[in-house]
Length: 395
Image (tube, rainbow, N blue to C red; front, side, top):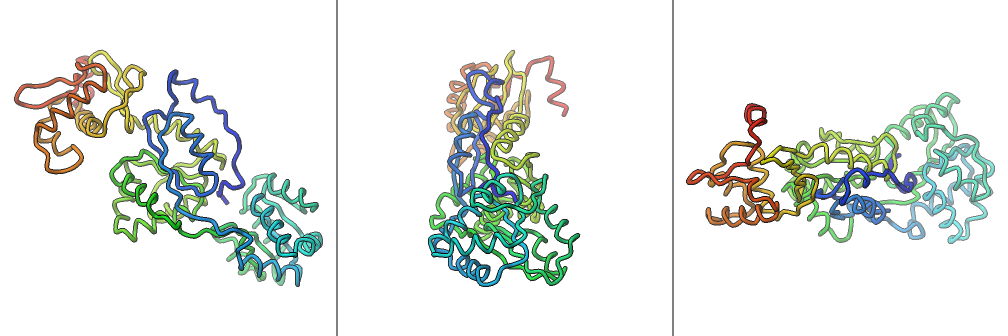
């Protein structure tokens, strides 16, 4: 399970120290699809310099209002299962609190004391023990695959196993138990539904297909499913998948979260440890590594999402200027005609005067006008350093 409701931790990776004056994500825009802990993830990204576009792709059904959880709790109280698998700390705590609110708290805890209680990971163990219970076993890997292997090795035929779900499927887990002859009872400790306000999601989709964001983060599989589903509803799924295949980096907190994207052929990046901090750390490595760096007019020019580093100094550039700069950088050292630059500008109905205006603003933003040369009656070009011209113009 990759949902970060149970896998967050403080992060002090020290990335800021690597780039004085700005964070490693300065100049990049990152979309955040999380519903839970979105503020924490956004703050981590912003502290490292990123602009954040928050678009919760889900909303959570409050536990106390969840009739499915109430029904599952009553079934467990009425007839104790042989095994209960607890998968998230917040889900387990919420389940006990909701049961208390329904007047079933003591009865639920009494039942859980009689079963084989398995806890996925140390945080779940902490929640179990805080409730006055003791887990029978917990995998060192925090992996549901290891939990499944243990159950199947013990034999599950004829056993009644309750599995705490938390809004997303456990690929193959429940099916494998049922194929082994177990009766499986799902405990939906919280459920996700589409957001009531689709405006932020639509804005994120528009930004992604227009390459207005550099990365989109996913902290649960349902968020990925929801975003892809909304793109399909709007008839823009192929465009979104194309963006994820090239300029927009899809970053997932773990392999389960990545499954819906991978099912559409999208390659994702994931941290080795399924936490918010390592996810941000991964972006701090990946996005700067993807930025185009060029030696221009004796300066080092690094082109990021909505800004440029000139000799390490961050320079904000208007969208039109970034469009021109990217068009020039695709052919460094070569003259790019005004007509080609005009087509690169966002919007329609422009004339070549718009190129001149945007170019003037670009030069002002860069703070070094000589980075872009005017070639009379032909167009513009980046003033690529002579020693590197051959390398960049023959690639």
